[in-house]
Image 1 (cartoon, one colour):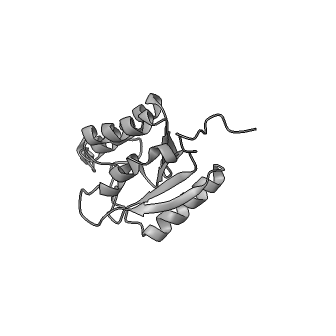
Image 2: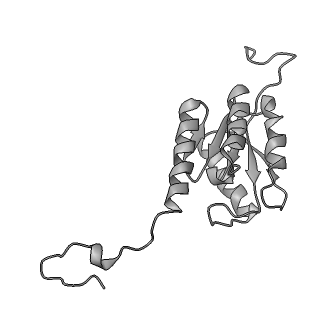
Length: 158
């Protein structure tokens, strides 16, 4: 029986295409070969075909390859990347990515966060995670010992 989703004017969607970056993301720098191994294993676990990754150019804030992938979504089930922190840091630019993915009926998979963005709930989860981490970057890293309550039998926290 022929696939009803396939037609002469609409290509069959096949697999998840990887997206790798040579930049650090959330303080982590991972070689492209390792990113590919992580994503290939993820795709295998999900029963998806893993398509050859596109590597981002080595310029800070560059997302040329990611945006190019968005134009090819009609041929893909989705895009897989190691982390949501590989997305553009600007919320407006991320919204453009989400809109393109959802508008194409595709999905965006962020392996390290076990996050799949395939609907508005996925977008909300990704944005919550990214906002929460942005706040954590601004919180104090230490507590003044004078602010800590006394504990029976302990007179110091040093």
